[in-house]
Amino acid sequence: MINNYEILETIKMINEHHLDIRTITMGISLFDCIGATGKATARRVYEKIVNSAKDLVNVGNKISKMYGVPIVNNRVSVTPISIIGATHQNYVELAKALDRACSEINVNFIGGYTALVQKAATAFEDVFIDTIPEALATTERVCASLNIASTRAGINMDVVRKMGHIIKETARLTSHKSSIGCAKLVVFANAVDDNPFMAGAFHGVGEGDRIINVGVSGPGVVKTALESIPDGDLAQVCEVIKKTAFKVTRVGQLVARTASEMLNANFGIVDLSLAPTPAVGDSVAHILEEIGLESVGGAGTTACLALLNDAVKKGGIMASSHVGGLSGAFIPVSEDIGMINAANAGVLSIEKLEAMTAVCSVGLDMIAIPGDTSAEIISAIIADEASIGVVNNKTTAVRLIPAVGLKVGDFIEFGGLLGRAPIMSVSNISPLKFISRGGRIAAPLHSNRN
Image (tube, rainbow, N blue to C red; front, side, top):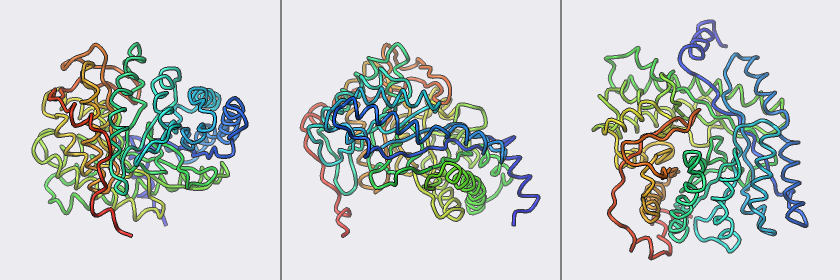
């Protein structure tokens, strides 16, 4: 039974410490939308998304009022478009159909302009990858992702090489909007099928027809809880984080089950990710500093993040039998005021962020770099991050924004949840020969576990 104290405690989490449902994401299978022509496929894709998710926003609003929990975003993810559009290869037309559907049902983002090319790319997937810059430049709400590596397959360096140029071209085509196309493009290793968060969400090929995945976030709640034990040892710190994560996940479980019932969809997962925003009091960096760092980016940062990520997962897993997605702690620079301040002060470097990604949920996320950074350096950063994911059997990702016309010391502004980011320094030592070799980095020995 839930007692009065727990009810009041949850209300305080919501009102004072930024506890929210970051997103209700409906995953929709599009396999039954492939038609005899490209236009027919695009029409069916539009119609299925609108018919399936037409009530998503209204249901989210009803649940928010019912339980008093803010629901920040309503989103949709779909079957990888590289597969759905393979027959006719009308990929940009499909991207525009996704965007129109997204606008019609009033969700803020739609994910699934995706290809899974961890081992090799087919001819139709090569065509798809080439369309990414145009698709992101001609739509407002479409998000793209690629899975270029996995622990079982290794790293597809041919696509890694290509992605440096794709990211540069995306930045150029959207330079009039702060290169925002790159903020909607993620390159994964070990991508998961049930991630509710953008820009990397897609509806996995092994998922059902319609599912509901919920992402919960509460960095401010965790920080406030830790303030109650200023002198506690690390065992006490872990216990406080676990108990807080448990309570937060229970809220997500309640919302996910209710949304699934009201939308007549299957309940997928609850993703307990400490996903920050630029708002004061909603920062993962500030949690790490509450644990004991003078500033995020200094010595001890990776250890504190490892402790936080593990405790969050342990607490969440006890609250729901369907915890999934990317549960843990996110470290997007532009979306976390503590990360922004540390990067701007020169305390937090891209090299330190890379080390942190070995123990957190995702990877190098929402990092702005000088616009003149070469394509091969961007590809090499992707390869470095993918190697961390492949060797450690975890999800990693790269979302870099080469800010056209900007240099180290400048800021790039996105607004809203995407925030603002300082342009961070990147080593100019050339990896051109390495990247130009192409081929595939083999899977590690421990991948052979059959």
